[in-house]
Image 1 (cartoon, helix red, strand yellow):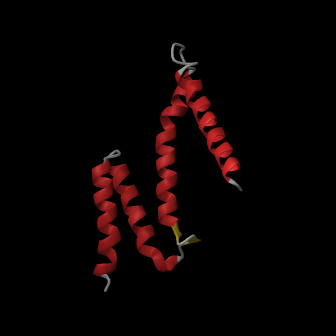
Image 2 (spheres, one colour):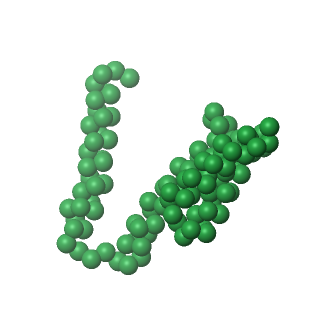
Length: 109
């Protein structure tokens, strides 16, 4: 790929990104969205965050983590339980997850 093709790709991505954002900001700004679309957009951020976290828990070096990486799975389970018990307290969830991730291997030495 030469320099001209690279710039064409960059400009094409810039125009595409602009059009995607403009479709919501410019075209739908003074209109009421359907209830189902508004609800789906509110659920999108937690879904994206969950996908990122799951990838961080399950993948190690581009491979699926096996059971030798059990502290990752145990910490994720503990964080999930803490999140459900605290009704979504992010601070408590992170503290419980990180404590489990670093504390469980230390306790079992």
